[in-house]
Image (spheres, rainbow, N blue to C red):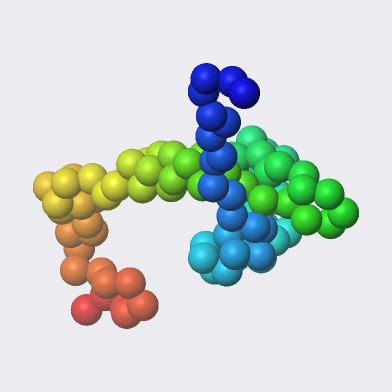
Length: 90
């Protein structure tokens, strides 16, 4: 028996990933085709799953990319003529 035991990486099935992200499986497949999402592992038949650690890394990257700029930046781009979205200027 080898000195090091084989480690098993936890996996999450496609249906659970889609439900957790509130998207369809087709959306996930589109992201995979674009290279924007981790590649699934074929479990045989019609079953696929993702490694949990790869999904966590993807989520951290998405959160870091979606951080809003500081408030000062938003003030700089706000319209100054009194126009508000959905309303006519006074």
